Length: 431
Image (tube, rainbow, N blue to C red; front, side):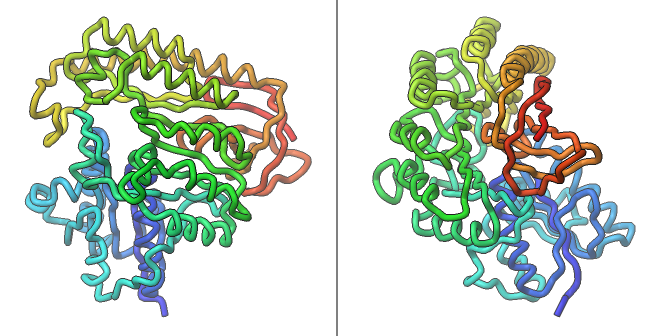
């Protein structure tokens, strides 16, 4: 029996999305009709899962809370609940500043929300989720928390120490996802590199990925958020030998200048970083590397930044994102450094870095013209089917646009697509 509607709004990363999906499954089991579309909020109860990583993310979370608060004051919704990372960090301040919110929950105590709604948490459904992604792909989280002590990062303040899930637990979840039609797994963690050390006393990611690659129904496995220091080298063999493991690795590097890597407390040097990248590309020919870089960290000189730009030009990352340093309370940087790079300089550096990457991306994309790639179809939009190659993760990477006409392509199916034209962040192809 349906008990009414609940809208869930998720902000931030894919790891937050998994938490929302678990909560939505609980709501569904309690008899609620659950929606997950921030553009069309219409339920009497709204739950916002917030992000609190950097200032821009916090501002977006506050903006959405205020927007829903106004909707509550106008009588469009009756109850408003807030959970997630921002709520974990700043619950006391948020309570005093946002009285329109009925209750705040941390990142891990959202089970109490069910009780506050008069419902019971179902432990037997703990590993189940109501997917908000297209049915053919899903994110799967292999751990929670982080043991690193990067100067700029507030994530350990919200998530706590690293806690690996068992391989058996992860494989069982993947089997359930595959049985439900999922063909592509996006394997995520705050730090994939550390997976297994707390449980098994060793790097267990290679063995886990091998296990995932043996599951029936799964055709693509993509790895997100490796840490460069103490990299598990056997993972390269797994990526190279296992056809289901995409030739793709997301590894956040942040910087290349030794001065900045030291200030950032990254536990790796610039030369070691370059050796790591060279070995990855040597052992996995054709791999596409995605990285994230930071500009404007305290102490970043013009020389440090120029070295970073040169590094991007030299390494020619297939996929790259960048962001400006945010002076976050509770972090090492906030306690030990002054935020001494101006906002204007940060923006200028970010713009320059991304303009360099755009040119590199355009050249890499152009090199694919005339080639045929295995493409999975995610959706259709007016004149095009929209898909991705194994080198493209959902939401963040380029897509392949296939003009409609002729054979109808189905969402969630793989097709060989010949690339006819390219742009810096898109490919155009035909069946």
